[in-house]
Image (cartoon, rainbow, N blue to C red; front, top):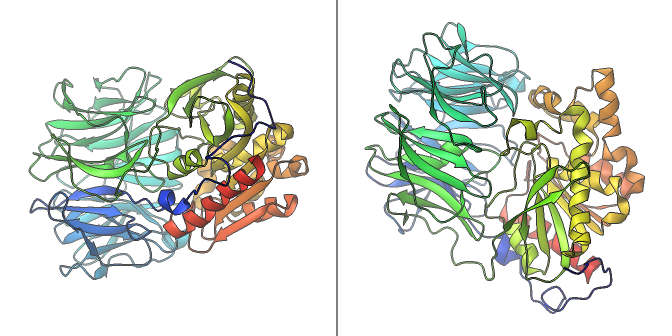
Length: 604
């Protein structure tokens, strides 16, 4: 293949201004997600049909959905209870989740939680439907308490007030014990059995990750863990003696079983397996671990975002006869399907996008010989300006989901290359540990090697960097690591300086992120955090830079955007009604429409 490193290479349409590109067409596409089956056979679900997430009710497949308790802020369904539908809602994307019950009229809410400064997370309905287990940080504190919420009275009863980030995972069938998780970092998770008086019993203490603890009967406990393995497996432990591993129920080989949902009768379970580009969904027998069925869906993945987990996208009907899944592909947004049979219930996404394209898996060799997996979206077979798009996390992974921004870039004439640099999940424990703390900059070098690979091997004529959250940090970092390599960049809610990030981020996130990035209170770690901060070398940035941020971001405060803009003179767009990401349709159109305009200006 001939070299693609030609900075003056001109392209015909669609890159040039003659192409009537419409950001609205791509960035206002809606999705459906978070299925909650109704007792009468209908369905509750969430959708951003009005431009932001709301809760809907649907009587049958393809029917017109009814919007419930309309709000200008997002509201998401959680689960059915003995007292009605439980929902969670926040303000302006600030992730300070509150809980309410939907009244029978479908238009009003009964508030359950009263602490408006606290985040109420991981709400889990008790087996009798009368209580909700949850974790919350009283008055916005650093540490999270574990508590049960009585749905009739609204009384909140603390079971434990430990230190750090904790999540409620499940209830024992009799409601007398909970399975809970202590989240030290996204890749270091401890599991415990918790009694109301606060007594804890550690589960699989030798494991790096113990998550999704669930009972299959009073005497059987299932968990996901990577104990003695590179990948997450579904295992069984004895709740009476939970320290040793009992038996492995399902091993997916070189892949993570990253979520599962038990059938109402607790005899079967649906598993979500990360096979790299796409997911595999299968049903197993919980007694034997035997594979019963591989579920047929178009190549894609269960819907994922930064405020929900995969289990919330999978739901059995109350009679256990049907399974609902929020599913999307690279070319079609998430809709809710019924299995078996694949009946599509929702029509949130409307007509297919013109010319939507699928990625192809790719790999490239990094600076030290490590093979880096990637996804490559191509307009056609010719060398083109290419956006190197970095995922967030860093414990994330570029996968075969529907990405409106990627499809908009393709429609604008740009190829998109999405590297899963070292530190990404989905490739085993060793791979996601290769960027910890003082190894951070090795992943940045992977990012620069992606652009060099594209130019050297004739795929790209020019390269731009783009990414959100940790991907925003990666964008800024590659700009200072090799300023001449990049022709433009877009930083979305990214970290510019690790010291100011740790100073200003929410207290509950500080400990979580210090375990991965380093602790600024430890002198040796403070030193490399300063060295790895793009702001400290911002003077080296040559590429035109656009910075996008939400005013209400509690994870990466907006000050990160403001200071990199002061240091570089970059263009800044801040959205007052957004948090960690740009999700409202109108804001997406403005933000990413401007991003594509910038790229076309620089590459035309």
